[in-house]
Every structure is written in structure tokens, then in C-alpha cells.
Image 1 (tube, rainbow, N blue to C red):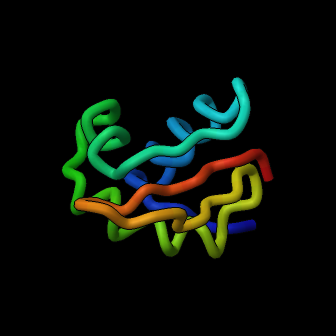
Image 2 (image 1 turned 90 degrees about the horizontal axis):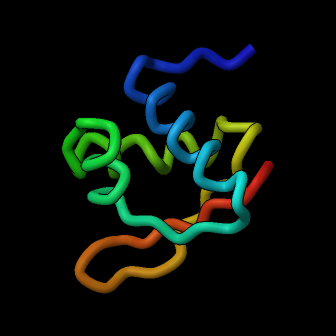
Length: 74
């Protein structure tokens, strides 16, 4: 079983809830605002979660001023 930090669990809970309605494109700031973390905290954890999360698939999608992440069901 994969071990997650408290922050990772909060991020995954948000993403899992978000993808129940289908594919989503999100930015770290959007997630951070919703779960009371900083965008930097979220952004530094998303690449690691992309590797170890089974419930959702997280893919770096685009980069303008900030990175956009594509999230789908795993």
C-alpha cells in the first residue's frame, strides 16, 4: 500500500472528487485555494503524486504562466 503525507492525501481527495464529473484541467493555485495550502506546496507534490497515485491519473499538460495539470480517473 502506498504511503501518503497529510498534504498528499488532501490533494488526492480534492482531485478524486473533481474527476467524478469527468476529466479536469487544474492549476496548483486552484487546488491550493480549495484545500488551504500554497500553490508551491501543491505544485511540488503533483509530480510525485502522478507517479504513485492509483485512483487518478495526473499528467503535466501545459505551461503558460503556471503549469496546467490534466486529471482523469485512474
